[in-house]
Image 1 (cartoon, rainbow, N blue to C red):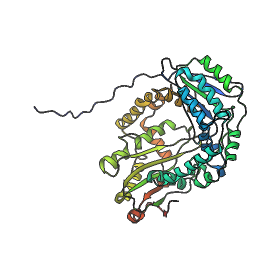
Image 2: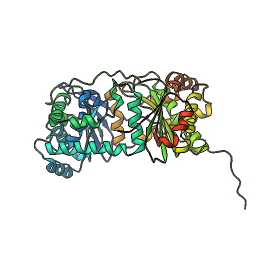
Image 3: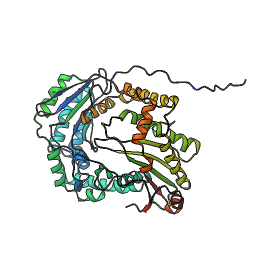
Length: 452
């Protein structure tokens, strides 16, 4: 019996209709906005408290204080030391977390529906009366410094850090990681953390997001009872104006003995409110955001240089980076850079085919509902509405906004947003093995640096 191959692969069906859950928001007198997303039958409830206390709100001399402050919130309250706090969360069966990014800080928990009100009480105590214990401060500070050292032993994380440092100019805070540098974190004191918390963690402009099987009226009563007397208005975030460090150039970060090279190529990208945000999503996915993207097909499938290549915009409140990335065999470093630059150039020269456009766009539209299958996903989806002031119908119109992107939109966005002629090219690897080939390729002025 002979099998007959079918040369035609299945085509995707039309995306199923999807409607983002209805939500409501109310504002307490102290300026705290409460967002509620009732999800009947959901087994868990997620609660996120967002505060304008991210890295963009710290001064550069204290880089990392936002992250360290957020981490300390889960180590106890004025009433409960670390052990008692942990026992309280275990008794309620809730998972508590606290972290920060460039644009915000978040204190959060997940619980069964019957423990939501008690969870809000503990969350309120955590953010209003944190213990900020000296021993816990020193422990977390040491962990952060150790993590920086460990990250620099990892080629990929080292490449990410050095790419930002080399791409943005010295006056742009984005040139470092949001959690700080060894120098800034090393100088932090407990008083710095106490001052940052007292100044930035305030009710005015903060957001409480609750999603799950909830009674909105009960949530509002708990919010008013536990957070209604929370006072203050923080100074908010800085207005950042990112700038590039220079034009087209090459930086090799020497890592003797590396058997691979980590490549990063990129430049300034877009902010969260850029008018071409949706074309940029499609463009980034077409370049390196899906398995069948141009970079992945060329470098992985056709040339076998890498296990995977990717590209993406990182929009923030201010202009974030655009980057293309791949880890390749050392001996093909120069060739891989050439191929990556070629793909960045080609996408500016002609509009994508309708087949390619539909495959990428349909993928983005198709996976869209998967993000909201859990209460955690729904809660996370409300965050950009709160942080960036996006319209309430943002997720209802999200699919239509993607589907409206046509081939000419992608080409126009590529010409406006992709600039291989002024991109930073960075490679982390063994300079003695690939430096000469990269120099001979004459991609631009070349500098070999040592990792810190």
